Length: 224
Ligand code: E4P
Image (cartoon, rainbow, N blue to C red; front, side, top):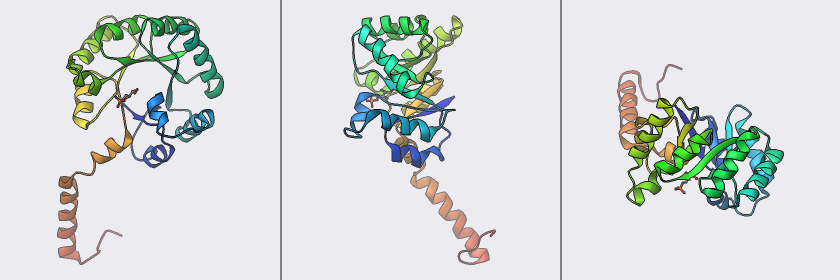
């Protein structure tokens, strides 16, 4: 089970890097748009430095023709290191690029997955991760849970190494469902993770413990 941060925001990554046990950071062009017109290589290198070499960094290509996707993949690893995961949408052109890049030992995260067929092609092409879009599937009446269960089954039944990194979440219920359906990993906006710890019930329980303690040992008392 892995959690990743679906963000390109440096202060958010710094804030939550020591809070959540996360395994990596995923971005896409829409996520990076939120950072304005930054120097993109400096920005991504800073993210790499903050998260350190143990965590994975997934960077999406911005072109859609296979020859250009391949060139972008080379540029990304030249700028950020060979261990960077290249995110490539699963289209006819994308699959062509994925197959070629796997012969060159690139790490691939196949993305923009809405259907079982897209994910299966990417698994067969040897993608390291496949990223099914949970919320976006639900928005267009595709059963996201059934799609993830299908990938989980295929990976186990055919002994494939591909991992499922479920993506596109709008609430933690969706994240938990993805894990229950067999996703190895979920990439989530860190603010959504933080909100899940800010429930009034949790704070209520803590307030009650404090009140009980102080009622016996006095205001502000602790073990210190
Ligand atoms: C991550 O890999 C995806 O690109 C991302 O989760 C999509 O999220 P969205 O549906 O909120 O844009």
